[in-house]
Length: 231
Image (cartoon, rainbow, N blue to C red; front, side, top):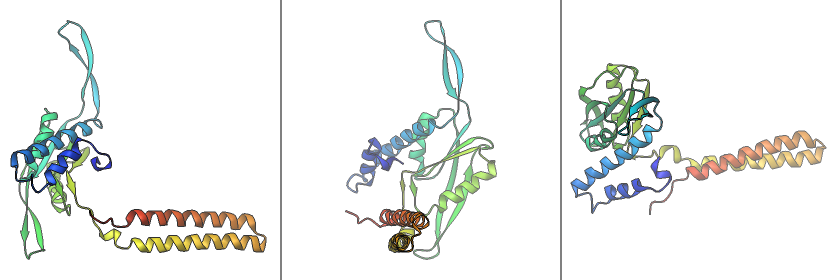
């Protein structure tokens, strides 16, 4: 996740999200390509390699490393094309797969995802890299993947996206986790007091320690789940 630490991707992403710069179509496309190139490099670290002897210009044999697995790069038309191009610049020998998906609206906020076109080589036993620059509900990604499965079952899958929405549904009840954490802490302190009063120090101490640990962990989790205000 490139959002975990600042890098060049942060700069490219800032330019893509800047409404004053989005009208520069060439820059927008190029930034998508750049992010695709960087992601391709990161994914390359997870691939399998083999030793390959090569003859250098000095006439000596050198042992180098080459990718030892077949790749298929897939994307979703049309927004994914520049992003896909960034991956192609790095994975020269990879196969290409294209899926055309679109939203068929029933009402303003109600729509179905429809797949109307698929062009792909066999992905059986290969490494599939599915790239889509914007991940909202994930419906397009899921249906595109299901369509690609008609071409075989990949051995490995990498999903790449530039911007992804975060569901706030699971964060709406963060305060319930906080209350549960506080209650567990109170129960833990109760066991601690009961142990001293009834001379059951060891049993109560261990129970109290467990409840205090659970309460503290859940309370801290609720803090992480609390929705952050947007600046």
